[in-house]
Length: 318
Length: 318
Image (tube, each protein chain N blue to C red):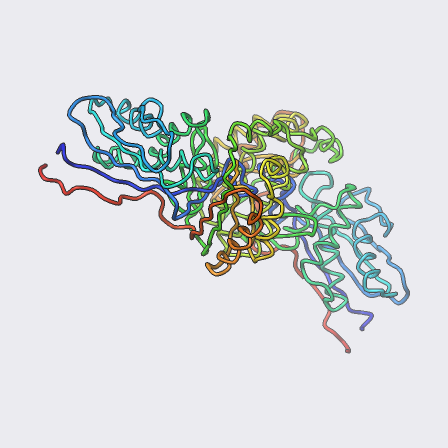
């Protein structure tokens, strides 16, 4: 292998849960996203030589998710090979947009490319999940799977992992509003009840089934009717100032659905066209205009592609 | 209208719940099924002139579901018109195969034809649901909708009713075994808990979403992996002797999934080919062979069509 060879990979932000798909559904955005740069090192061990883009993230390879993911891949291959990694965060941490998933997915992809692709994409999902385990204590796949595979991805089950990519059957544009408040995933999860009313469960799975059918049959009306969450949103949205007003504004501006992205605080809305999504973004921002809370907005199509190679050296020797 | 005109309609048995689709999913069989014969009468009021096929069913039009459905249709049309109805049951009552739904669907369809089709098929679902309300106290749609529409039907929501026909995207054959024990729907419902563990809920909606995607993407593997029910089957199956053994036998014989039909006691299994379904039926029957419990078996494709006209008079005058 050539010591000068390097790989630079990009993995996008993702929206998990998607109203009725709590813990089983996510979709990719085109941007924002994270970049991971990786190179083979002379001596064993993983070094993270730079973490840029956001302040306060550790460069300790045992603590930063990109190091954790890479180490697990090397361990499973029983390789003593050393790696040099860099992480450029292009998105905020703790926003509910799958920040740790984007870093983990980019790391898994970059290291796999660097090592000559020993792993399948499905296996990369499992490695990226190790980053999630590090970041949140739970190896969930509903962010890393769309970050790696693009489009909408169903995580049907975990034992064994069954990841079902739906692609992007219909054009879909996502407006994201990130209110810059701190909201720990652990807090957002801790307020969830461990038992749910049967009646609400039935409505939830009816809606998720409707969303799947709507996506695959290209039925925007059915998609819109299905984008509801009566179980988690009522409990979680109280942690997000002005959530109700933002949602009303998004729907009034033409969004087909609106909800909490992941465990929040970001709020997402889906629209059928870019023009509608622009109007929706504007309407959502307006709600926060004089609130004293800083916001960031993103507008992105739901792309067919997830993680990707954005730069690499040419091989100088075999 | 011509007093001699008559209509005869057939509506098939249906399998509701379908493992992971509790209360929201059902599919049609081709047979068995019920026939309803309907004719305009000289004087107002509904008369049921015959109920054949099974013993013990009332001919009181206020008590038999076909009378209830027909009366509601006349009431909503503000018609004083009288009707003569007959019901021929081609399937057992209390079997978990949507017996009341088949009668109700056939009645709704026959009366609508007789009156010159004042109602849409979606409206007929609502009228047939009145028969279900009469029969079980709950106006559910997961049997009447597939009985009317054929194929697989998702009942996404009830408020308002949102019925989503999936058709039959892939060939599917259903083996049904009906152990002739008495099992009241009310008992089978009463043992259900009104709260469910969140974790099981998540697996249930992951599976239902997987089933939808499997059906629409024609992925038999995914369909098979999705046909599970960890919430209701463990509680309900204890009311059905030998259920576990029958299920094991069906899966061992090649069925892609097996579960309780509706609230039981019938057991259904789905297979990709008629040959497999035949082997599955034989394997299921064998389990009961020396049990002392009488059984009935049905083997049917899942048909694209549900209720249908099987006979009518030619109009003698306009």
